[in-house]
Amino acid sequence: MTTNPDAIRDQVREGYTKIAKDGQWSSVQNAPTDGGSCCGGGGCCGPTTLTADQVASAVGYSGDDLSALPEGANMGLSCGNPTAIAALQSGEVVLDLGSGGGMDCFLAGPRVGPTGRVIGVDMTPDMLSKARTNIENYRTRSGLNNVEFRLGEIEHLPLADASIDVVLSNCVINLSPDQAQVWREVARVLKPGGRVAISDLALLKPLPELVVADLEALIGCVAGARLVDAILSDMEAAGLSDIELTSKPEYVEAMTTWQDPLYQKIIAALPRGSKMSEYVTSLDIAARKP
Image (cartoon, rainbow, N blue to C red; front, side):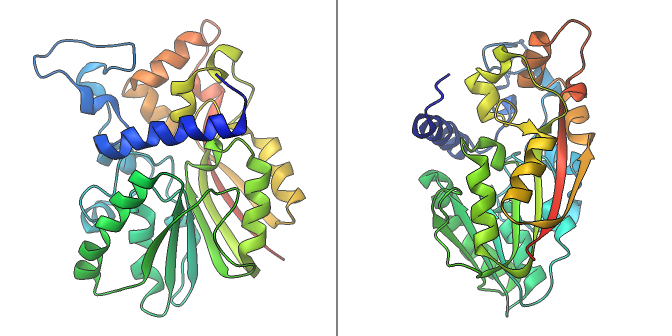
């Protein structure tokens, strides 16, 4: 796999364009209807593959949350529930990094109410189109007109300095080839006193090079994950404070237990007898801008 930042972005964009068109990040969409097996090669591993709703439930989204979403907004891309840890307040301006189909934006909108605003930023045009298509459905369901989506890279956000109260993100920062720059951008756009509520995958110890070089593992949010200590260093260097990093093993355990094909592929590349949870965790990330 290339190490060129622009080439990595192109590969990620191509991968997420396919996800947007297919409807979810899960091999369940390729499940055979004849009961046969198609394990390996990016295929499915039978009926144990997680659906989008099962992924969301595994990381803490309630049934009420999922039923309130426009159709197709949840594509199984979550590794946590940032809207739950954000404690959003009426009137706040919220930014979602890598907003995808708009799932967390549509959940945040009612929480900030008619005087608040939610802005989703995504670099994949097909994701942006998918999210924007659902705005009318959201307006009808909620009676609110407070969600918008912008095309842009999270390393170069299309937002003014000190314009955001809360930055959300759900399993996206690990996809960036320059994660330190993402944290600098987060600090730039936050208002003084503004806060971070992010869920992302992180490493407890380094992955084998075979996994790091795997493009499918990058698109699946594993190969680009950084060590917890490196994430902390990037956030501190960006000027963020009151940093809290909370490991949430439930996501990795769910994907392993349900035999997600990508996770089975990664486990096969680990030293014999190793567990995925020894290397990778879902991380709840909270912080403030002084």
